[in-house]
Image 1 (cartoon, rainbow, N blue to C red):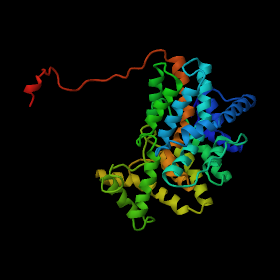
Image 2: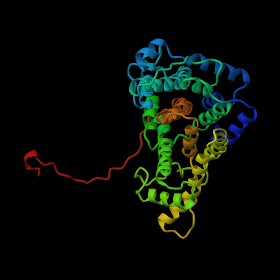
Image 3: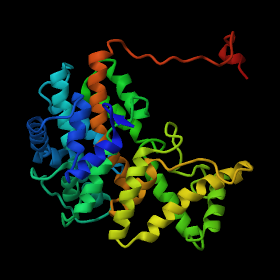
Image 4: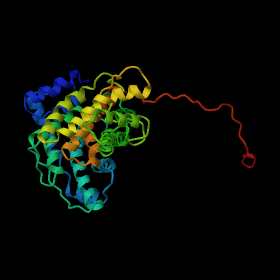
Length: 385
């Protein structure tokens, strides 16, 4: 997996070696096609921090009065309002689109945090906490600051959230939401409409909701397996999931396997190491070990379910698998898992929109083949049975 030709592991390890957060630089890399020099990165970061805040009118009139039970739904609403408050919303010149995209990259985490607080207040009868964004924090630090009642977070938590933002920032043009963004952008519609369409795609549980499904699956294992630390019992439960007799009935072991990364998802490899470090810090190694056990036994479960002689099929976890663990270890509310995906992927969507408008001059029309009956005769209404 590469961003603008740079291996994702090299990008992440580069930031870790320099002991700094890298999401903002990753967004710059995706949008402009090259690694920034310090001066350009400083200017980019300055512009993002200036744009993080929402006006009091926006918070009071858009976020708080109409809280949604689904945070992505609220993010879609907010994005359409950004169109109405933009002084030049329909101009698709590159410099204007860059301005709009930077505004969305900066504001998405604030909208997600505030939308969650509004939901807690209105729907769950919790106290309301609205913290103002800080300009001295990175995107990862700022989100933790906004989300938590006491605004506290550890250095490791911020580092891992930054890692999550980096590895979720883009994933080729073929994933569902990014393709949706390309498709809609090819009509030359405005930036906000294209991003709303991408958000609608991401909201689906088979796309942006997979990490939530994974976390719920692990709950099922802990609730229904008498000894979750026993390989044989976990294996039996996984086979029952495949049979549709356990889990959510979908016959899917969530978080395992990927359409592109058939041998190994490089994002999951990076994340697994940090998940273990976080589990150690939180004294939750039993949680990590259960995830590792499911990873180890899924291939064997598939082989037995399919009646194969092989003891284990080759299947590895995807990025959603250990992201579910990391989010739970950091006590993130599960109803914001999909929306947190969008906070990161907005960087990739922005880059792909710019690319589509600059390079794709024709309307995208996906091919389709009619497979229904031919030569059907019209029947008058009074003669239809």
